[in-house]
Length: 455
Image (cartoon, rainbow, N blue to C red; front, side, top):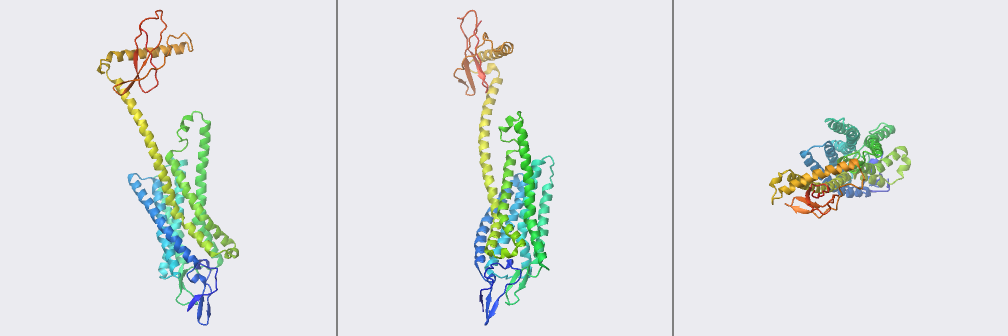
């Protein structure tokens, strides 16, 4: 008969231990340690991983579906990389999370040694792949923004191939370190562990440091370098633009240095990186603490360390949320741009229709207005020539023979052209001669046309 005793009451996960925990056998009663029975750590794993499994499966499947549809319309390198990131997160969701749930439910390992090694490999493969794909995304943004002329069709493929190959290489040691082992005292109790896999404690410490560097430190350095260089270059270009007076008109379009699409993609990728750092930093902080001072870390409740690892696994759920958030914003902005473009298109169509009417033969206008229109065009040309000569010859002269009068109310002809009637006074010797108004077309611009008195 086996039951829980008072041995290793602070231990909730056997993977924190360096070796098998002790058990007591008193009067035929086996007192198991707390890591060998169903405990609070197992309850926490089952509850949280079940929730994360549902959220991550729905989110990453949706993102993968949307990116696949977009790729069929026109593949972009950043979309392909985001697809691989969604695949990596799905591998974490479909392999690591169900494994943790089933393992917490059964407590001990109830499968073969081959499955122990295989699942240990896939348990970290998705985590490595997710980190390395984000490094590829950062490098892609680096080349796209800082070195846009150095385009290479195979660069993205090569980086993704290196990410997959590097994930396989970094995950292979797990298959050799984890193995199925039976408890030396409790017969029939098997566990998938790393006990007795390292020759010395230094080897164990070296492996933990190498894992931390490959999965966290190396990607973090790549993120800081790539995005730091990007923002430094953007800052320098903005400084040059602000000093250039000629570039004032370009700042009005909000596209000083980057296009709107590049800005949105850059913000999205940086948000994904920030989520990665927030999720994984606490866990690796305590791992670093454990490698430097094991005595003080042993005093920390093991539930804290398990909770931090679960929190790190939420990174796979957050990536599709970040992607969805920026795509919703992008669609809203695109809809606003479409409405603005429609207004511009409508105005352009109206101007085009006015120009087409001007290009028509004058005699073809209805209601016998051909002669009037011909006179209007001729008078407009002559008046503009006179005004230009006066402006160049005697600017500001109060004796100018042409004085602009206020624009009269517009009239409509054929519902396409706005017509204005304007009167002017010409300084003549005969002030009471009859005046004939000249009608001029307003072709989309604010051009005031005056009539000239008969001479």
